[in-house]
Image (cartoon, rainbow over all chains, first blue to last red; front, side):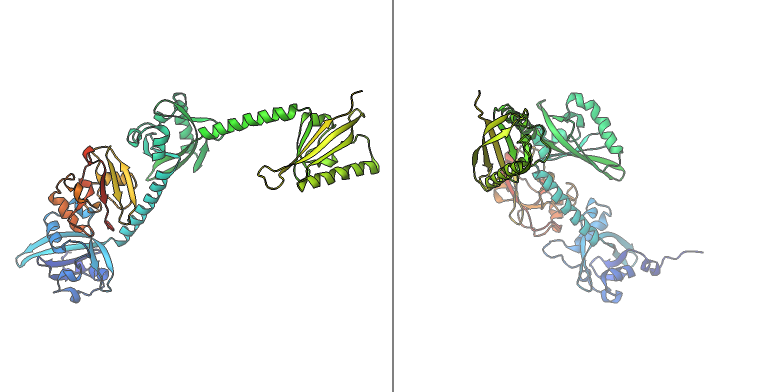
Length: 382
Length: 106
């Protein structure tokens, strides 16, 4: 069975096609073009192609000149990037990718033009471009360093934060092995560590919260880091990206806080006076060594007035002593400094005169956050 | 390292510093400056890196070639001082250059 090429065949082409004279008069349109434009053939045939592809607003492009140019060279690079516009019967503007060739026969020469509607492609490119720019700008202004590597652990991306942290320019890092940013002794372990993560089911991992991680700057100095890594795979190729935070200041603050805590703990524990820190409700948070010597034991979350200050005392006398102390704590909670003398019974059943005070502590100047209880044994030495 | 000031059509100012030999398009794209797309990657095959060059810098930017002028047919709101920024390579004598962007590239 022979196969005849007829205009029926062109009508069944999935691509929109029209034929025009070199002066731009439309002489043929196929069905796909009718569907694309909403015009029927007889509305276009005999018309200038400017009806279909008018001069784009605020652009200089002369459609007929460019069709002629592309017909001369059917595969220029520009065809991948330059689009023309079709205005449909309904007035919608559709972006079209154009292929054009020149067809000569005995009767004359024509342009054969194929159009592909790329409006939605362009919309998705613009949306992706926008999303990419937002991401890039956030990465550009972020304080943390971000570095990505390919499966060979070569740096494929680094942000300005990485330049600041490591002291290299982007150009010095891109394409280089990740090892350039690692301390020499860590470099050999790093590959297997990343490989374990890459092969794991985890989408991301925080490293450095427990173990100490360090990076190496261009000048060779080391910097303590906390690193979150994540992986993305596109077309089978995995990119590993790390958000890298310089924790030098945090480490210094932790050390300063630890030293400060140790110094104040030494003062607190070594004081001759018994001291206890209470919540405003009277719960014991801390009690120092001198305080613990007055008591057989201090249970957790104990209320200050329920501690065993009064030895073997029982009955109404004990209840009254506790009520007095509780009332004093409540007055202190309201902001009053309490100063009193009281008698306590020591663990060896001996009686002690105590110069006792409750001091409201207001760290921010407003509201009582703690109550400091102090007691000094002023029993006359016989 | 010439410094370039890129001003978006909405007035937003971006200052970037790039190595000599970088084109204005690359300077914008590699620094995530919005308003310059560079779809063809600098082959002078599209018109998505269109910029306006102030008069005082036009001579330094050199003459545009035929292909660049042709591509500008597809750019939006082309003026006498329009250029495709992928065709302008920065060098140290262009330190401090300011360029302006059109309302849109597509």
